[in-house]
Amino acid sequence: MHLFVRDLSGHSLSFDAFDVSSLQYAVADRTAIPVEDQRLVFGSSQLVSGRTLSSYGIEAGNTVGLALRLRGGAPKKRCGFMLSNTDRCSQAAVRIVGDCQLCSASFCSRHRLAEDHSCPKLSTCREEAFERNKARLEADATHTEKLARV
Ligand SMILES: [Zn+2]
Ligand SMILES: [Zn+2]
Image 1 (spheres, protein in one colour):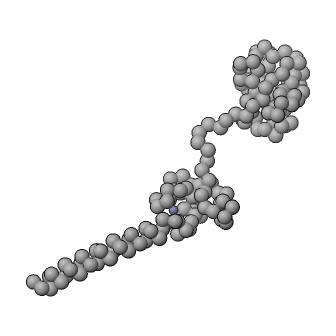
Image 2 (spheres, protein in one colour):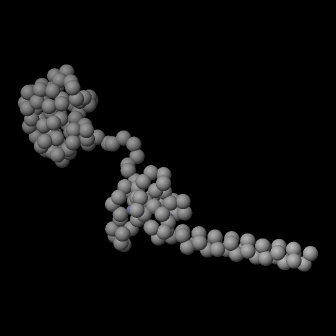
Image 3 (cartoon, rainbow, N blue to C red):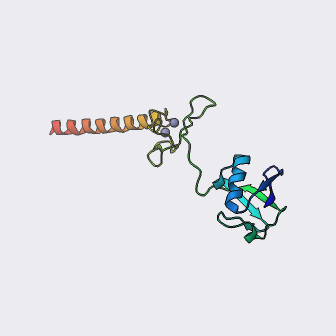
């Protein structure tokens, strides 16, 4: 069956297809949009692969609309490490362990440690640890002094 598909930019492409699947593959071939990303719509119905075009009431010469399917789920997180002022690390962030405990940004396996992404919170964290340590040492010192006096 000869029919048309109106693509994202409004151009009509002509196809010869007998069922939804063959149309999807033909569209993928011509538009470079993978089958799983295509959303073919005729009237108010979305075409499902495996069904015939005529089951949707599509006749020769009709036009089917093509849209992009929105991928389900949250988009993949990218590593937040800046390689330079403008270049971001292109690796995908690792889940859970890629989240920095200090700055709560997500990183790939190479940059996930605070030291590796030169975490902005790292120095404050070190200072805090240093202060805590110092306070403890001083407390210990007074404690030992007291003991010594007894
Ligand atoms: Zn990275
Ligand atoms: Zn961090």
